[in-house]
Image 1 (cartoon, rainbow, N blue to C red):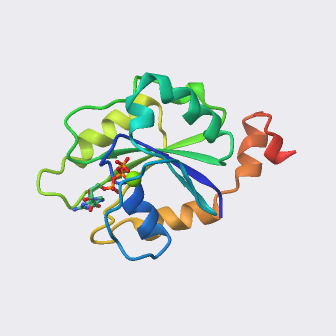
Image 2: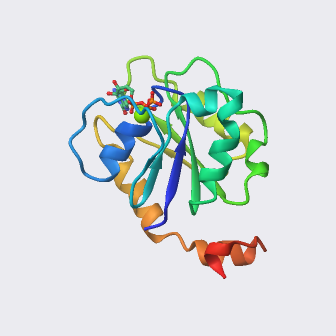
Amino acid sequence: MNKVILIGRSESGKTTLTQALTNKDIRYEKTQIVQRGEFIIDTPGEYIQTRNFGGALAVYAYESDIVGLLISADEPFSLFPPNITSMANRLVIGIVTGIDKKDARPDRAENWLRLAGCKKIFKVSSATGEGIDELREFLSTFDCKEYYKTQKIQQSNYK
Ligand SMILES: Nc1nc2c(ncn2[C@@H]2O[C@H](COP(=O)(O)OP(=O)(O)OP(=O)(O)O)[C@@H](O)[C@H]2O)c(=O)[nH]1
Ligand SMILES: [Mg+2]
């Protein structure tokens, strides 16, 4: 499985998605520090919400194969500036979370992620499990080595 770093504002569902992807029981736990799992790096939302922590996310992203930007389907605005993905020398995917929520607007969240530069978008609910298998399948099977070769991205992980 590729290693993915999950980035998104607090309450966007990073930890819950981590639990869903790894078949753990879903239980709320505030992320206080960056959690490095075997396949998933779960970051506290404050890192993307606070300018001074932004650099740390860039450093942690170097440990990953794929960067996942999350927006919950009921979020009122996006934190990600247009074309932010061009800053990363990693594949950046968009993940719309909480598609089961009452006020969910998954298409609006998807548009924001596309504006940020994500080409591949997943829409998931960690509560109902919708879309989780598809995302897990992608993370397990995507050939990063080939991708980075064709994109001519130099990566120490992929020499
Ligand atoms: N209905 C629904 N609720 C969700 C979903 N994903 C997360 N939640 C709820 O949203 C709240 C926040 O989820 P977290 O996974 O802790 O959010 P986080 O992004 O890890 O937040 P920080 O650790 O603060 O950065 C929790 O109460 C979750 O139960 C989902 O897919 N559907
Ligand atoms: Mg968390």
